[in-house]
Length: 227
Ligand SMILES: Nc1nc2c(ncn2[C@@H]2O[C@H](COP(=O)(O)OP(=O)(O)OP(=O)(O)O)[C@@H](O)[C@H]2O)c(=O)[nH]1
Ligand SMILES: [Mg+2]
Image 1 (tube, protein in one colour):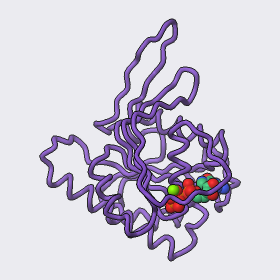
Image 2: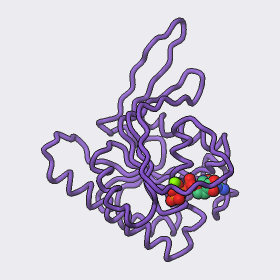
Image 3: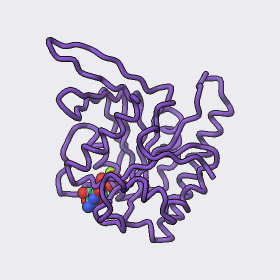
Image 4: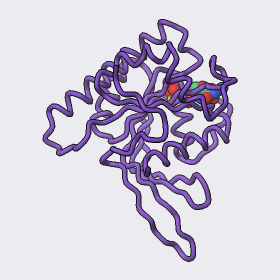
């Protein structure tokens, strides 16, 4: 059984994650630096919506299918008046199977790996087996890169699962503060752990359409990154 963190103590060992304090005028803000971020998942799971939130935007109601690769650089996001973060590069890629190799390249290139899972589909066996396949390939890539070494990485990369559509999932009524733990403990999620091998994972859950929930997600990610 792999070690599976819930939020709070994750990310701390990411060598690429660091934070620094800087002063601007009379205000002191804390900048969390996330470096390169890789995001992928099956079609329609909320990848672009999550990326939009990371970019500091509020997503609209209209769904736009991602058909080509889009690169965003030097993203500066704000989670509160005195809490900011920076992402060096973030790439949005379509969720279709023919993009798997693009994704695996991102996994190799980026420090922080986010795999998006639609929590409302976790009871669908066909969907879950696609997720297991994707995660299996992702873990293989991380392990192969780690074994190949030569880059001086002190730690093997982790994989963060961003569980979206919390509002439409079986856990919609669970208190927000308990949701990540309850979901991490669920049979549906345990079936996904199997693909993780020795690689560490962390689970977040969110309703990306809700500002409060999305802000909490980003705050949690940033807090974990600097703790
Ligand atoms: N209710 C709810 N809807 C969501 C959530 N996250 C995303 N959506 C909606 O789900 C749909 C798919 O979101 P996208 O961000 O386009 O998904 P994607 O993974 O980028 O899709 P492709 O790029 O086409 O593969 C959109 O209509 C979003 O508004 C969520 O947490 N809750
Ligand atoms: Mg998209």
